[in-house]
Amino acid sequence: MPTPVLDIPPKRAKNAGPVLNQTRPAASNSKMVPPTPQLNKAGWMRVLLFRIRQTGRIVLPLLVILMVFAVAFGAMKLPWATPVMEKDNPPAKESLAVELVTARPNSLLVPEDVRKSLGIHKGNVDQIAVAEKPGRTRPLVMPGSTALDPARLVRVRVRFAPAEVLEIGKIDDPHSSPGNIPPLRRERQAGDPVKKGDLLAVLSSIDVGNKKNDLFDALSQLRLNEKILERAEAQAAALPEVFLLNARHNVQADRNAVSRAENTLRTWAIPEEDIQAVRDEVKNTSGGQDKRAKEKDRLKQWARVELKARDDGFIIEQNIALHETVVDNTTNLFQIAKVDPLIVLAAAAEDDLPALQDLKSQTQNSIGWTVRTVGAKPIFGLIDDIGYLIDPNQHTAVVRGHIPNPKGLLRAGQFVTATVDLLPPKDVVEVPISAVVEDGKDSIVFVQADAKRPIYTMRRVQVTNRFEQTAYVRSAPVTKDEELAPGEDRQPSLPTEPLREGERVLTAGALELKTALANELSETAKPEEPKAL
Image (cartoon, rainbow, N blue to C red; front, side, top):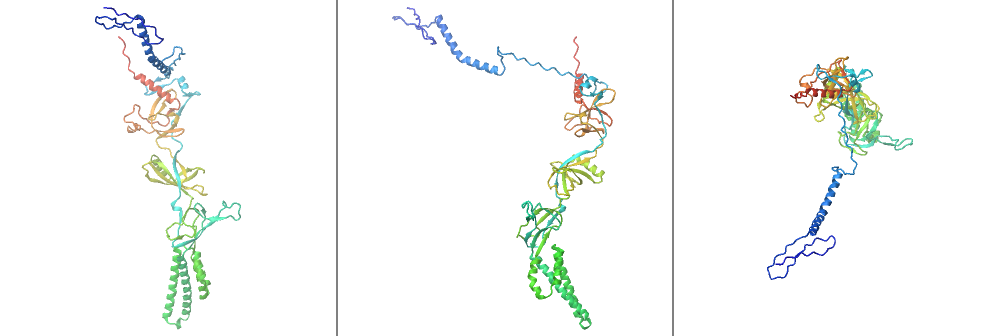
């Protein structure tokens, strides 16, 4: 049986793929044996190189991408890159060279060098303050606004209707006619100042004219009946008694008619000079012919009513126009406000109300305050009333008072701040604000019991008031219920104690000493390690 011969393939072009040599079966009548492919050493190398090249086309770009990301994010350092020097960890802050005083709880003995480094000892003097009773008042600043006094508003109305507006009072307007002599005039309007007696408007009312005419007729009839009675009494012996009685009755009836007409006019706020003008008209009337000739002109003149300002102030409301007919006698045609004094309404926090009440009782209901606003100097006024109702949203009460405003420079509705000097509270002492260390929960001071020994004891205190330079600290004993700070649900490790008058408190380095004391206490509380056998 013939052996298959492995032909050597011809040389291929560069980068061509490997080709397997196949055997060619020889022609024979014997049974055919399938060819078995075989590779020589050179063929296996070509196949291996081909597979390496195919794999490298995929793997190599992936490796390059991974290296770029690694270099970008610092996960890998390039061999040629300059090594970055790692930052040395900063040395731990050295603890203060203070000594825990075991004989006194929460006390530290601070050497002189430490006191100098912390600023406690300056210029051979320790920064110590003595707790004292407050020697000055504390300001209570309340926001508020000005307002008009409702009791000082003048409402100008007419008590008769209907009435036609014939004229509106006018004033000089130098702004619209600068340099004109005399200046142009314009109608009054809201915001203009008025003086007592200034003309506001002129109305025409037929009812007023008729009532003045009734008064004229009553006065004329009274004048006639008084002459008849006078002549009848002169001839009383010759006249029947009933005639005299009738004459007297007529005079009395005329007087009643005169009084009724005058009272109606006065009720309508008709000026006395207008009523007197009717009386004078009766005296000047000579005969009936003259009366009939002037009756029409008098009625037109008597229907004229002038509205004048009853007091000084500013017009804050105007509800009429020229040739308008007023049909409602309850309408405010003008409203004039007296602006001196002005009311001040301020909001006081409910926590400050007890102090205000104490001040009110001690000053015999005469509490002064200073009101400040933009564009004006501080103004001193008095508080009239402290509101009883509390606003449930703002938790404030309304404090009502007044301030003088003689020139009318202040306006109603202006924002103001009212300051009241409250008396210092009882059972407190005053210390510098720098002596108190606060962390939002506790208020700490360091107390020096002996002025000759640099031993400072940490004490938890209760601050009642804080100011720019000082603070008020409670000096009265604290009950167990009051030892808990707001938000605490259990008893604190350091109880709250009072700070009494005359005690010495540290005003510098308190925060550092608090930290040093905490470190010393934590070191003391560590359990000792068991000794090795």
